[in-house]
Image (cartoon, rainbow, N blue to C red; front, side, top):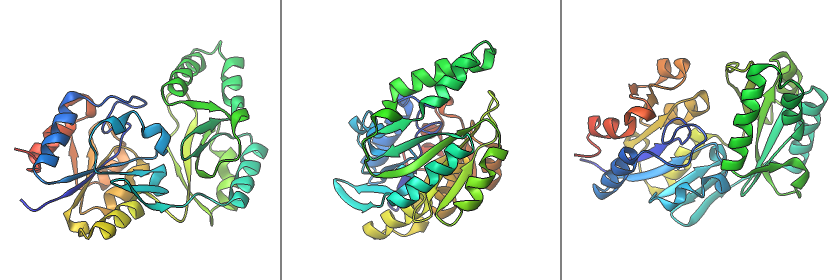
Length: 277
């Protein structure tokens, strides 16, 4: 079989959301695919620092920060944080509209303490109490630190948590030339979550940059994802697969759907597409 290059989202695809340990079946699939001569890349919205637990496993490269920072082997082939002016303008508009946010640098993330304060103030409401516990666990697992510890490092991406969609109207309109907004449907807790990504890059552009650098045609690439922030990656790759546990909207747009991450989805998909024997 002709050599393929495989791009894997992490949360909800390679691992359960927010976790750092892939199922053994996924690790087996990756190992066998590489033994068969295929290349396997992580392609994640996580910054490089958040990827460190997963880099203990053998991957051929990394697309981090939704395409803003790319490594092929040990070679950095793309590194493009937002400008300071873009960052300051975005933060000001989010704060003016009561939108909570996390800024993601290359090696660390810093979250608006106001979000946890808001949840704590409304902890009597069962959903907020549960979300507060989840946020604390997530921040501990992924080493997300308080915004007060931020020391001016370059920023690649901004994650937003908004009580309402309307509060994002002005930031989306004013910042639309500099940032694309990937807004998720309101979650079970009622919050609107999303990502602000520089127009200069996205996961799809990251796939193109890697394939171009390696001299591999896009038709020989296959991508796996689960949420709408994976859309450009799935559209750009020669073949795009959505996890069964993924977004219903993405499922309609993907070339195929494979079993969920909790049902050995990657291993079963690698078998189906003859990436492994």
